[in-house]
Length: 386
Image (spheres, rainbow, N blue to C red):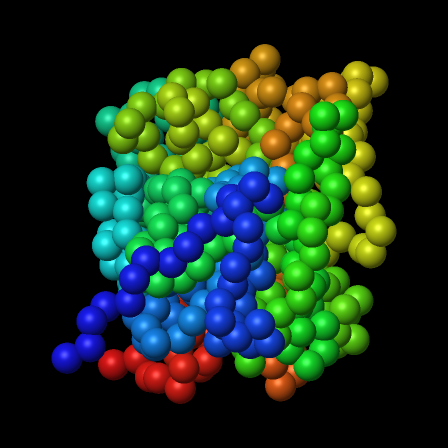
């Protein structure tokens, strides 16, 4: 009977010498670039499907990276916007979330607010009767109907951290504060980063590794990395999504509300707004704040227009509770991957060449991301889901 592998090693800063293994040419079987929730989930799944594989997880920042999309993701697991064919994958993901997060996964109602009745709709006033603070956000005369679903909320940043830590306990190595650049032939350049006393980020040392399998799990940056460094063009895209704050009070059991594409997610006693994504942003697009009654705001113009259009249905958006900011830096935002360039596409993974895979989460990563990461792990290891 073989013994379990020892825990993996963690290199958090350049003061810790990087010693990848005994074989300098190929010390790892799998090298995952990006330790957001998709990359971290993949690392954990690999330890379960093929614990003998030596895996290195590389992240340019910390765990989780505060500049990435993971930390700003909605963290809402629900089948409300999925076709029936994807419900089994969503249920599998939910069970996985329960196992990883425990009490940090919180059940909540999820209400889709409508101006017309439809199948399974009920009066909005009835569904929100037990949540007067939620009812106060909207005009039930404008949105008199609602469809109720189940949802579970969580913090995607916590998920990334838990998954990575679990993978490390099972033998995965983690290299933080390191910029990784893939090259054809299974080669990766690693630049270990440090900060000077003048707050400049510089390369402290450079390493080159080879691995039979490399996975790009760098979110919205992955398609550009594939094109620039591997010469592989994909149809994937990205969009810049901001998540403004609404200071209206919310309770521990307040429902998630969804109206005309906008999601109001109860969080920290208030609300985080998740605006709709209408299309991919063109190459070279730089988000610009819009103007409201001539006053500059930090919200990009397209998002601001959406919120103004919703103020009749959600009067709370027309109050000072909505934090608009004065510049883009005032509003949390990040680039979001759009698999296949579609704003409502599900997570996916692609084989880019003989050595490299691409793993993307995107808008439905909350509900289907763990399933997709597990699917890629099984493809890499040749396993199958029972």
